[in-house]
Image: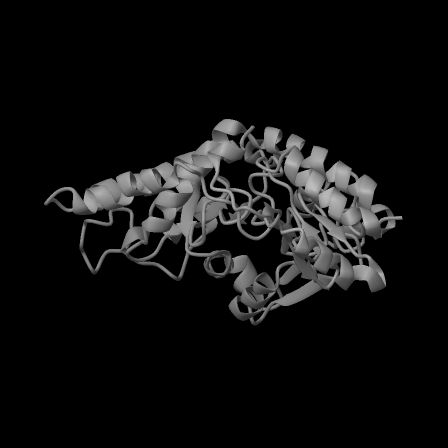
Length: 370
């Protein structure tokens, strides 16, 4: 039903955990929002370009049920993470404690360690299932300053129990930071209901918005506590004041923005986010789960990711043991696009993966399933 809205390859495309497919309408929208203000007149395009970024923030607010002023564009999550944690005196002091999982995306661990060299970073071991509340409970001690939580884990297909975790973190008096890079667009997220302290995300995966358009969200309760070090003229309360002796933080999350911004990635992403905000993450998730359940039934013991909708991400992870390479080759031969990590092959059905796609996948898997 939705396949005609996207530019689809001839292959069965199940790499949505990596890069989502572009909308058919994207090229025209990009030309209108980015190139036309630049090419189509003799006036400065910045007024139009900055309105693109405001639209990006507004569409994120629709998608996540929050306020546009609490979102700030970022070039990527690593940069956003560094800016955020270095802005909080509680985290930059000697002895600060951060809790993460070894299954978080490595870039987040790299950035955290470099940004907070005096902090102690504790890791939940990679062999523990972070979709289970009891695993987290064993590590939630009262000396923790920040809990970093991936809403979905890219290599394990696990989903963090945010409904359980965030109240527990608040009760400890710790800060919470949720990474939604692998979840945004497929796992519904209501910021007003969940109330984390901070959130980081991107648009390249399930939101089909391309690379370079990341975002940082700061709760209204924490905004004034943040004093970013990495600033520029767009971090200023009035970027066009041009007084080199008077810097004042912007009164919104744009205090984290920095210098002259890129525009093109946000023109692409705003259009795509608007599509999914209108469609609704609930609808995407319902379709995703329907297709995942078919994979789960077919794969049997080869399924190594959770099969509980409350614990699984949008991705099924399959490991056929000694037959794994043969399975991968059979899927490639059937022109099915997926990838393989240490834990197994990753298969991620999106809203545009319909009956024909799933039938080809299941037929290719059938000889190997017991």
